[in-house]
Image (cartoon, rainbow, N blue to C red; front, side, top):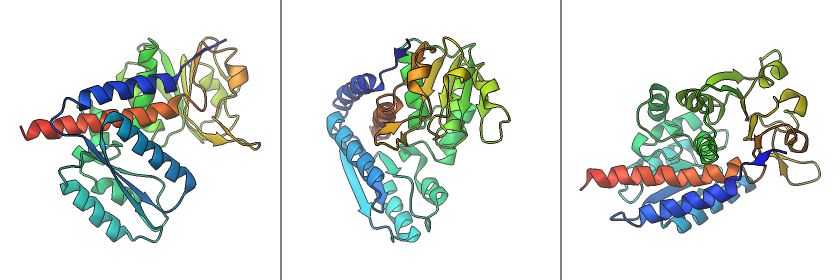
Length: 282
């Protein structure tokens, strides 16, 4: 039976550490979150981030806007937040309504206030190994691996999914940690042939039941990033947890694995940005 990688427990530990460090700063770090529309899942995410800010001793600035808000108005808001000295991190809750360009919004956030690390400049820094904040979900996965003493160096790592938010940066962070990385996607002709070789398998596709036990190497580390709804209610990932957990050495649960880590490392990112801002004004 696989060892469960407990993201919930580690996230609690990381938030406590962030709170201790934040308390030593001359002023409280501040996170501004922009929510456009009334999507229930997005509302829940924003509410959770507000709770995390309170636990870490951060200031939280919420901007909940109607779905019909124009792109011009959103860009103007981001411009004001960019210049607000109380705001260290800015986050736009995705997805946004169709009439708004995600690319335009994310590019408008100043790189030194980019809490999600989606700005092209920060993506470029990650790619070239320069110091920067990292995208929260892949960063959370790396923290989880580190906590359990799982070193990607020299291991065959397979990432299923190539999104800009998870798949691509996940592959890059594993590569930076000296893993040998294969990326799989919808055009991969034989997914099983690739995943069965993986010492570390990360699935971020968003398809319930995608990864079955016969697709997993004995003793592998299996990281399930996806959050899918079950027909009978509740949530599950891409991985057939019950079957794969009998074969893997380590596995993340859904929920309680990667999700809490994403929120915790967002707080780490905001703390890092705040430290840089406060260093520059001393």
